[in-house]
Image (cartoon, rainbow, N blue to C red; front, side, top):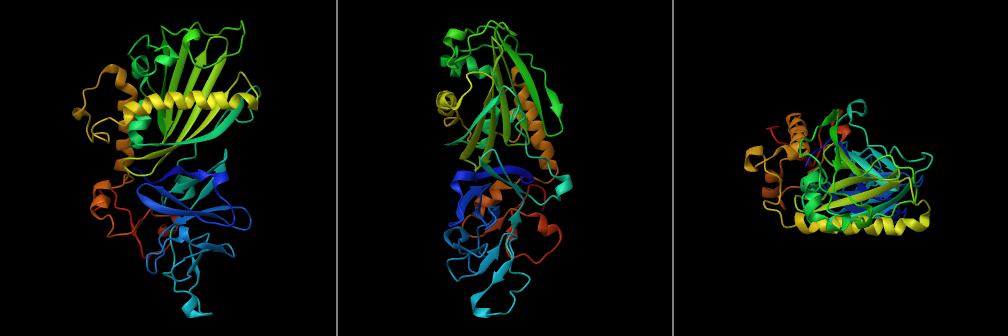
Length: 368
């Protein structure tokens, strides 16, 4: 798991102005709430007084109140009230981590890391939003019992479709020589599938003679460690593009927020079968992923025997290694050893401006 990227926290519908909500990501607990202006706020969930859960507290005057002793923290993470102190200002050390938030597509995203704004990887934008002839549906949320890297790598693997997705016609790639195109925060590929037949495919498409491809053409790309986009182009200029924003809950569970774009069978009345189709396909993947061993991806490539068709997965792992070398990878083994003994926080941007924080920052690989 990696800091310094944007992660989905919850859907907009899950958040109101009456109750804070807990979210678990990257092995830590967060609290998310709305202030009186309707703005979503995301903080570390651990009260730095005696370990109370802010998510179990109340929202009072744009602050979240700890249910244990009534300490109040505003949206910037500053403690504004300590009841026993009366009118005295809380000490400077009375603060918790607060994270930048961007709410769009019906999802609350938070930047979980300490990079200043100018240096942050951007949140991936849904290019089809507002584009003429396209419709966006979702978000659809599913939680899967697998490590997020295993989930992303599954989406980057065109070879598995022939064996895992018979309901899609078991599409087989024409060549396992897959060329990658790199971008700053990820890479992509596009493959042609030789044995595709529309009749076997679950996706309904428009009846049109305008054909820009004879078979199935599909591609995938990733942006950062946890965002993946899959494009499917069917005969008749029918395209489906799925955006998956993944939230690593722990090293064994992942919550995925799916946004689907299409340029055919438009209309809200068609959204449900689109969602049902994607969820059926996802269920086929999950059946494989939940039985993988080891649970997590190996640290080195020589622990798995790769072939040319695994080029997208190999390139993904090379990007992960680069982000690890930047000091962004969380040391999960240390966190597991300290589980229950130490309350960690993802470092927020404010830690670069001030010190004297109560909670320890999550341990990072190579940071010691």
